[in-house]
Image (tube, rainbow, N blue to C red; front, side):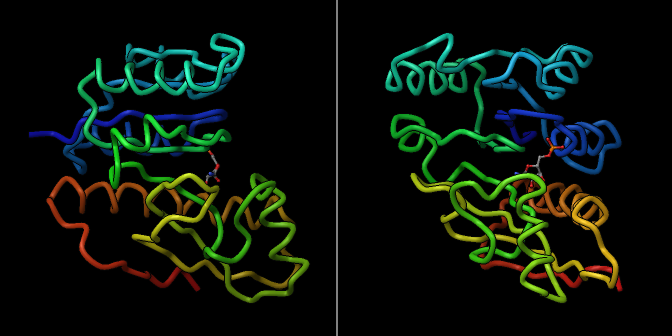
Length: 206
Ligand code: GRF
């Protein structure tokens, strides 16, 4: 049976799109059942609407009380029969009710080699700026299980990406993003195939 996914996204949604494309191409046996966003303007919400995938805006605006928001997110995922949750550019913490209900079945994608360049405030171009400032020659992508802290749960897949001389944060972000899309799809394929034992690091393009 196809893997039933729930996507949580705050922004552009290119990782969500990579999942959709792989499903359409038949390279991933999954079905995106619902998209949840805290941001009504998110590109991910437009993408969901275009594909006629249910999209819900659940945020501190719709649910000012954190526990009520957490419960609403959990309920929405359950109502759509979701097996696994993917945080695809979701900038909020996942609450304890949702974490417990989907324990070990929530993934986040992060554009660096965790535990480096992760944690509070490390999102978007800030990550790549920090990598360039540190002078690292290699960065990459990490996919990890989600717990109550930002970017901290067990890493289940990584891909390395070279940092090249003259890289700007934007150029580096674009190179990393390409690998994000590939790693997210290949990791979900592993999950769909019932295999998520041991983490895998792949070498990026040279
Ligand atoms: C990606 O870089 C992802 O690793 C990070 O947020 C960004 C989301 O991009 N968590 P998109 O919305 O999927 O295009």
